[in-house]
Length: 337
Ligand code: CP
Image 1 (cartoon, rainbow, N blue to C red):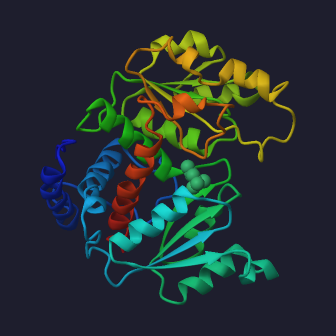
Image 2 (cartoon, rainbow, N blue to C red):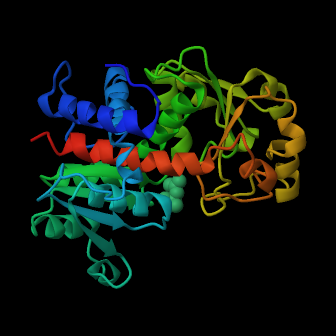
């Protein structure tokens, strides 16, 4: 199947085609009941998922922003760590597919009385939930839940390990921006810059981009870029200015101050001077380079406001695309018994 990033009118027509394709499994057999990491997906599965997401992309632009694909299903959002984009995006994605959505707020729930993650999830599932979307500060939390419940589990970010829907929406955004209708990113070079070590976004981006054919360069100070990352098929670099002219996409990561345990750089000012994306630094890159950031932004540290809000930035497009991607994920996993 080939999709095209075209007008909303054409896209609406394509949406039905894509939904029909997934429903009938014509030419493709989606088999994943859970989405825990992008590492579990093949290149073909990633492409099929992004094509399915593309089919849903126009729903959010309609006056009635709803399709009946998940009518009668229940999605539970279990966020044990802060979130703005991912939490609201999953809530809206499930609502737009006509699912019922329930939200667990850890503070004020029995988690605050010491109930375990496993017990919490099993009790929520006992109320007839079909999908649990979980964010947790511990790597492996989503896999633990998938082993503990019978319903589907989606990882919305677990510790430093994985944030699969972020990797998928970032790949979708690169393909959209560069006109790669078939989600083949061959020949594209992506720099992922900053606090690689603590970033689940980096790990999920590496898997998504490399599986779709892109070259990935990881850029950061040695203290935030362990040499083991080269085993994931990436080039490692410490000199941002040397890398800049070679790349088509720059994905700036948030410095995760809450996860950095020992001093990783002499000062925030020095970090910003060496690794911050400023207007001046951007001038060294290709004129049409794409600038990405998963949010939330540390403005003035890893990215200057003029760049984050500038014409090359896809920061808000990423958020918009995240909704379609999460609709695609919810749609596909709920079709697997
Ligand atoms: N990008 C991202 O995961 O943002 P939130 O933490 O707001 O969900």
